[in-house]
Length: 162
Image (cartoon, rainbow, N blue to C red):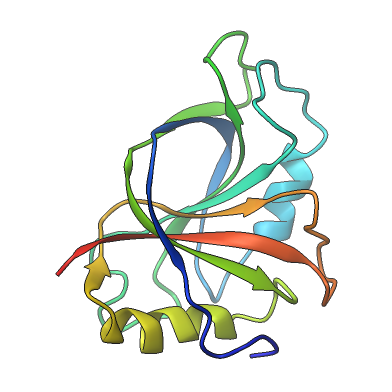
């Protein structure tokens, strides 16, 4: 990993979020996230709370057992909104439930998945937490630059106390 290998997360209760965006089923073998974002980014959405983009992933409860690269998950390209009003017809809504998250501030290439290996293989097993069955998401704020080693984002991992 091109960042520090012992990143300490912030543990925080995150309030529910209203999201508007597009989603697509994909897998690690058939990873079409660029296609998803390219179809979403030109769309104008009312009631956005910030310029931050939300990259959300919904995994099946069994996804992390055995880690099959062809197992599908639902990937979202979204923004947070204050209310679901005047949502464009080609977009969907989603309420991200309130819950406890481990928040990792990551700097580096978004294509470098070693941060996730660190989180799931090192940090989580050695913490007082287990993965919770809620969506994972990343907040892509003003310091996010796609495919740039200086890019920054916050990774939210849903957790609960062991």
